[in-house]
Image (cartoon, rainbow, N blue to C red; front, side):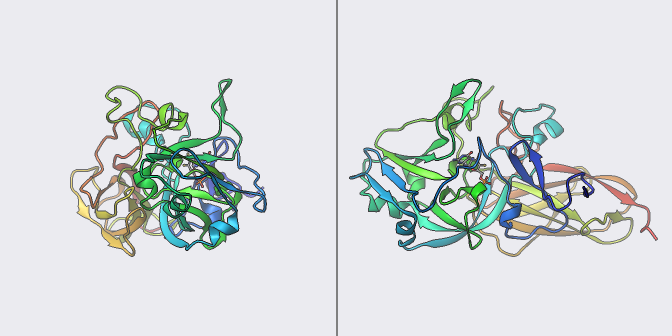
Length: 363
Ligand code: MTE
């Protein structure tokens, strides 16, 4: 079998973490992530749903009547297509070990548990209102149709997580389209939630039910997992919703080429910030002593990512520590250390990259 330079079968664009797939890029990263390169995070496995018999159920004491919708009924409402990032809560978990000296359990994602797609669907608010949403409703429990999640002999039921009503009515989509195609099976076919800027677990795949309630209900996906646990975390600050500001370095001088003393190269990367947009990206080529403003390139919208570039002419050979940090439009800047927590969620610190500079170009 042919293998690429990372040892993966040729044509495989993922790092495999059990059933989870992490996107790996070589060189420049496209603004939109192709469907077959989009990271996958499944608690059990993809649900096998027959779209013809599939129904979305809207239930609970927060709607005037119980309602069901077929896929074509959902598609008959006015739809929207939004370019949005989807990011796993554990994106960057590996760096708790690599940069902060504490390995945290769970999938050891690098920074490839994020992608950007054009999602087509109907606003969740449209469907809730159509089903007779009551003023007294406070949340929506979105329930997936994948197999119940069993862990350590305990059956935790179907993957589900409550969404506060304010976010549900703001910008959430019930999506059936991804980059102009039906949702691939791994990404929630035939319909899923897309919750812009929030932890990936909020974007429930293989959506089967929306339970709208007038009192707050919990699920293990907002109490046991996907919540901050450990020293310094309490009921007041441990809820996980918005993703933090983050950035990465993608290329040093173009695909597969390194940097050479005295020769100008172009550092490139991306930055993103949960619900916000990016206001600034800074790069240090000396381990964080001096910082240089990078140029933001192309679209820079909330709940998405933006590309950045910075010319660099290395003055000496040998290894250099490059560090990238971003600031978002709400003023959040990536810290030197991410707030620690037992499950390794929301790694948000500036990431460091060791780059070797050659004396001269290979002949
Ligand atoms: N929804 C269901 N029903 N089951 C799941 O396992 N995983 C969640 C979320 N929605 C999950 C789910 C998590 S943790 C993430 S990060 C995103 O889906 C991943 O979406 P993707 O696999 O399409 O990239």
